[in-house]
Picture (cartoon, rainbow, N blue to C red):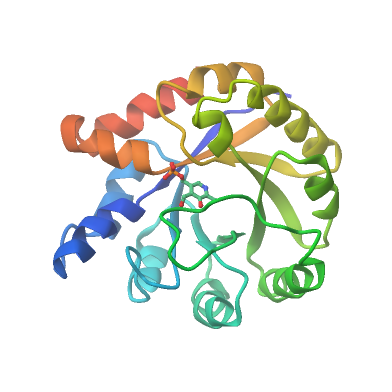
Length: 242
Ligand code: PXP
């Protein structure tokens, strides 16, 4: 089956610049619209416990402005469920929540979820999300045991953590490939993300056609400073749809 790879443009770091000055600009909602106009298939944002980029008030604004799909990454906590689920539930567009681990003080997400150790918690949170008609994805390391443990009713997608590959561990490509095939065989759609750039994407795209969605943030926003957001998004799209 042929497919057109999807890009989830993560606009968190537009909000990082805004929060650095406690200003109202630059506005991540504006960035979301530019990314969509350039061809992004999804807008991804991550609401963190410390609100260092996306803040609560951004979520309903993004939900209303995004014309494609909004993918909100969050920790599987009561606080995040109470905040995010009511905003995305009962909206005419069916949006997505991606569950990610979060450690206080981390610079960025440090790894995939430990679904094996946290089965009951994750099952409960997935049920709450999916009964509100929101798609659910889990952010998982390319680890066969974690992927097997992710067979939980309500989950339609696994996002494979590409961080180790992007740190220069080329042998990770094979692990990602195996994990993507395993996830696909288990009936999941397969996404990938973390640390992806226009340099490290081409080998991944050609070697792992099982991946149908890429969530990319830091490199797009960083490049946009020099080439503009429209071009930064289009350049990445040209690679993932090659
Ligand atoms: N996917 C997930 C689950 C993430 O947590 C992040 C970082 O917020 C990304 C993708 C994007 O990573 P990057 O900003 O390195 O492209």
